[in-house]
Image 1 (spheres, rainbow, N blue to C red):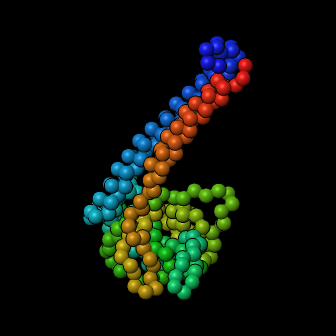
Image 2 (cartoon, one colour; image 1 turned 90 degrees about the vertical axis):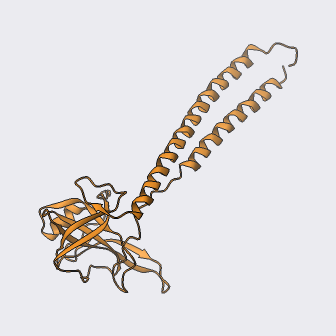
Image 3 (cartoon, rainbow, N blue to C red; image 1 turned 45 degrees about the vertical axis):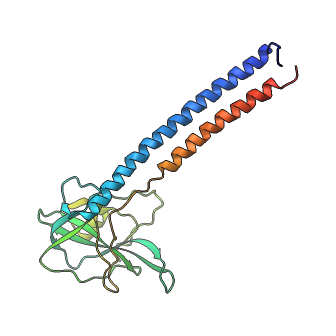
Length: 238
């Protein structure tokens, strides 16, 4: 085609594909830039969580953040335990079935907060030794988990639940004032046979860097594909 005018039909094909490629390029670059911003945002969140992990717990407020270590003063409510979930953990002896042990804790304001003491082996809750009188529990808050209509119904006779719903668990305990969240206890490894608490604050994953590279890589593919398309059109015989 050198030295010859390009047929109008081919111009239309090149312009049509060029417009489409430009739209895709702008969209992919926008997605890549958005993921870069999310990458830096999540990185700041992770840094704040790591810093909070090293600090002493702050008093539990009315609107606690799930990314800070909080402390609650009050007393344990004896004689009431519940079991949440059906989880399998690996051990040197093989897989072990268990769940999270939920115990009520009454704050100084009279509101009951359900505390997740950690994972225990078994299929139903069992009482664990707890201090009597005034106590302090620390950890992080966890919002109620939403499940679809096919989630198993709780076994109220055994106090086994498959939804982390503080209102439902609190009502099964017989409480009328229950905090709308669960306090997940954070602590060192327990004695043998006791609940295994969360080792640290939850650290959300940050995969935005990989996503950004993916979008930018696809943008480069669009550019290369259009170059190859133009070359193919120009080399077509008249």
